Image (cartoon, rainbow, N blue to C red; front, side):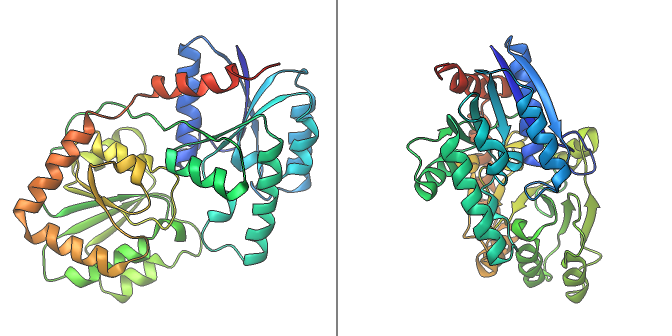
Length: 341
């Protein structure tokens, strides 16, 4: 089988890692191992709200694909421009992979969110199949847009050695782009309530222009405790996980949360929000945006050895339940394979 995979530009940019980019790249690699002919089409643009040049490039790319071909489109590229994608739905077998519903990005003006939501609905209804990256996300997408079926294909996880940690308690890690949706402000406010206890926290991820986290850290006098590391990949990221005693992800919205399973693969305990499918029973799931809940959980982590031991045990159990990227790719490949020409 041949799959034409339409990707946003920057999928391999190490300065701007994202879960969606990692998912796309790892699935492409594993599909190749399984014998699938994957033809990458990368379209640079300010997705999901591109300029006319990017729209034209996407139109030209789709026009150049032969009738009846399977085309897997990253939702970031496809869902905001139905006027480009939908006209090809009659002759191509379009499959849209939704990493995050467009309107779920935090901070969008209401009019922009409404427009993107309507565009996404039109695009998904025109596609032959829709894929989301977790069972929860698939159910929500189907209900929200009135779709008959959304396939859930969860990300894989690479096996990793157990983290050694630091002292078993005090080194906290958050791996996420510094955007409002990831909730770093919630974590800073919660950490500000436990300054009577020893801890340090690394924020690993690209910092978006205008994000107020630096000002918030300074306001609480936490500059010597919270380290803004920037984006990490490869061995440096592995070392950050290896040194972590606790992983924290206070997101306001997620479709899966790959960084959570990367932590669990190393046996690192997790407290997070909006990641039920990734976390499973492997840690503590907290309400999104709830500073008080995170503050209480952090204090308990820092003071209750029995509870820390329980969270470590849960992480170790979940570690053995995680699937591989080859399993993810095989499951994804079954979606277009089931479509009639």
